[in-house]
Length: 307
Image (cartoon, rainbow, N blue to C red; front, side, top):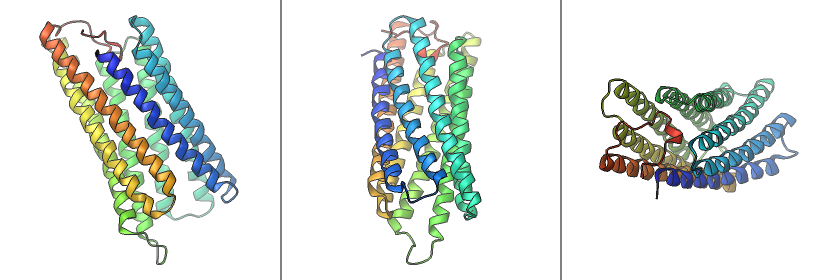
């Protein structure tokens, strides 16, 4: 199995993950319909739209990684990145609506801070996707993709902060509404998982920047980059797995079906990251075996398969 073939599998698994997320959004919309302010219903609808667009993005990425011609692969992946940006923008608008509703209803500052952090995180994710689109359209360098990775790190860090605010909020609930230990532990795991995801994105950015520096110096760079990206993907998988465990624990605090689906979605992302790790490790091995250290590879997402 070639590198891009494995990355296509990773995109396919990511699409399944997005289906689970869409199912969770459908349940949330159905359960809250008629019982919440109109703004929250509109926000839940936008979340569902976001999930649908994300599914389409993963499908286009899956097709793109299977393209043999480099230019056609680049074009497909740039379209996929644009769809990811659109999906994140829809989710960001949903979070912005919830923030406005919480302020208008005089909600506690912790709730408003949670929604604000989620909104800011979505903005960072949109920025990351746009950076990838621009980079792919211009023949992306490792440095450009590194900046996108740092934006992903900001997105994950803001999500960790959002779940941290939510944890402090539910802990403050008085009896008999105070959550169980499983619920608070679940939120803590979700927040911790997103911290690990942020670390993984920083590692990916470091791998890309390091590759650019080494290539400019005429040093061996490609196998080192693939190895570092493999380690980053393993850390991504660990972060999503921890977050999945948190969602499954959080089912003890109501909305069980929705949280289970969110957990399965996070497990899907963990599996996709694991598949990407295998792809990068295999690529590194083939590079070393065939002496491809200095071959053309400035475009990470559209590299020709080493074998």
